[in-house]
Length: 534
Ligand code: GLN
Image (cartoon, rainbow, N blue to C red; front, top):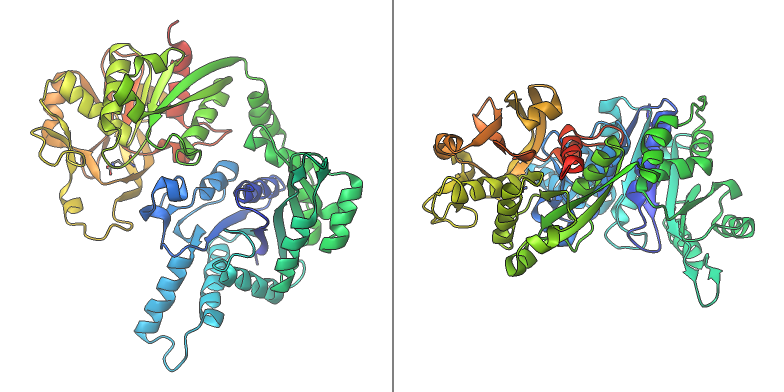
């Protein structure tokens, strides 16, 4: 039977609960435990797929095609936990299911209520994940901040679960903030006391506090927090700001977090350390031998979280090459105004990420033209691949006004367009080409060289596709089709001849990259960028 760790957050949002949960998973795996991780999100969207990045940040896609919260990306990067549609529980999904059951008559005769119907649905969904994956410890992160009205049903569900499972089977960890007031020169514990107090009011008593702080916590402060928050002194864990998020498991281990969790859950296992992570990831991040600058040309540049997995995957590609990756964020609308050249003075490679809608598209096309003509390593992902195709069609194959029908429904040369099944789509939720699809690679391409394998599987999230009516015409002009989905004959990767590294893929490789196992394309792209200009 699985044991459970419930992770809540207090005082403010953006405390890094997801990274805390992922780090806990990493530390427990290193102890030899099989873990599962679940993210509960209190919003009423069924999934984040219908929100824009300014609302939600990146939408992370699992192999089974679920559109989920970006915290699931942290889980996959830090751990080997198998994530699926069930790993993401939103209030929208829970309510949708309960209301559908009510209409079906499953609760016939009863009044359907938040307690017990919504809370039972949440509990069942949590338990299902641990049972179906046969795990030792299930980590459940509750989104939002304690005190929010909308997360209450989730908190009530975990309160009940803790009570039902009992000591040693369930544990509450609260991630909180110790703000430092500069003018007073003091680190404040009161917000943490209040936030733990709010939890106690609803019957949840955290046993471990992970305290985000800019400054070290003194012994005296630890004792004070322990006394007023009802936890052991050793359960006040310091969670300082770190330079690289991948340092977190190491920092928490030094604080004794894994030992403490095992003690509270009554699990006895030897400590074999996390040397490979320390040496293979953290040490390389701290003192890389080389340095490279990658320009990312997109439209959600101002938002840190919009291209989360891409930025992380670039860092992983750097780790694999023993290089620091500096990321230069360029707004494609600025490129439309003032050209790309001036931005790329210090860049060794250009990446165009995914995206939707026509804003900034011409700027991206101009950027691709420049990198193609100047032999600058280029990596186009999803929309980036479509842009590369449009650019090639317009400027090399001379197909007038070539475009995607997403941006110009009347284009005379729709090199990117909807396939039949997408034309029939009416509902916008979960109706794109989503999740893992297989791809066969063409030998003697940058992609084949990177994967060293001709059969791969990658995750998708898009509606539009390379239009096969133009395939022969574009190939005759030097476009390489480096990857094809064999089942449906869809173009998955385009490259161009006589360019050091120019790869556009219709899928999202960034979702499968890990700090200790960089995705082959990101590794290859950074290698090419390091060689640029040599
Ligand atoms: N807007 C494009 C499409 O729907 C690309 C999507 C993406 O980049 N994820 O096909």
